[in-house]
Image (cartoon, rainbow, N blue to C red):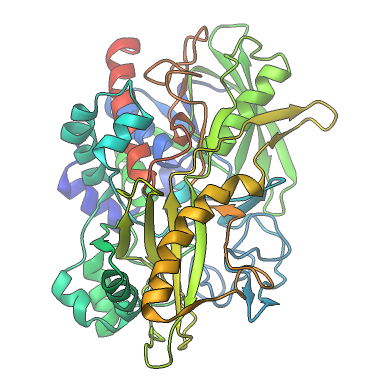
Length: 523
């Protein structure tokens, strides 16, 4: 298990430059991991700790160089080219204000946040060494035990809660806010207002653990350190305070001396190699998105960790193109949006939510036990730097609808069959909760933040899950049947829903799976 000293050192220094060593055409590696998000980072640490030289390939850049403003990441109020992946205009989740488009033009660049658009949904994903950990709100929530058993029936829930969730939370650097400080902190006034109104309306609330260093946040509030969570830094990265994967799992893996990370390379093909193992083809990208070079390397084992969307699209394409023709029919199926829907309420003038708002949520409304429509809603910030009397929420619901990835032979691309109307169960569940709160508090919805006269942010997700579901597309540990040496180890294994923010579940499941794979396949 990762030592506390290793974690503290990693959180300070991150991945050393020596580990950022691009693969060359023709290289041969024992293990290659596609993606550096939660599953990929777990694989990297445990493989290297087991003595196996491991190469991680990440399509985004290594975020370790400051821009002209002296900062690595830009903030939400002044987004620049660092904000979005290969876009010329921002695509903010809350993209309107007073019904007016609030997005702005930016320079095309391999920025940190991707808003990938499909026919019926926008999927937000992190791009960079550390994947989604760079751009999320850091909420490290463990799912309800009964729901984990429901969504992953072949997984021993007792082992997950006794061993793998604790292992994951320790290695991720999860910590909790001090309740006494929370009650007086200016930066959490918005959360206290929503919490108190939820309680007064009959709903339970709970504190949310986080990977952001709450000790650092207290210093931000006191004005003794540079601000990050209190400087409108959330979805475009945090310059301080956040224990993202480049500072935890990946830094600990790099410390073994057996890890190399090839950044700004996108894997385009995986197929059997004539000499044995797997031929992995990748394009090296320029910061404008063009291809600089194409390389093919050979790997004895390949771990797919490109995220629910990336892994599913790649494997569906490989099957359709005949490179991996015998992949199971279940590959590409079982995708869901974790029941995500956003909503906002307008507060009374006397219920100020605060001009200073921490970008790291600390409280959620827990109505998951409601059989009529389970809802877990994080109380989200609206860090505009001025008082706006807005309460914002990201609701996670039990939406049963699923979609699949499909290959289009005419265009050579992979699409997603999800339609916005499939999110109606999520809207209905959230509406029951927030209608009740509005009635009790004599408040109304904001209808100007997600479009013109649009109450619900129902066409987006932060939590893509599924596409290569455990026990259907893979065996019970992520092995792809009939393809020895190919493994899936990311959120695509989880069938569309976790009931909470999913990254701790993805991490713990990866810990469980890689432990078995190392013991049985690599011993």
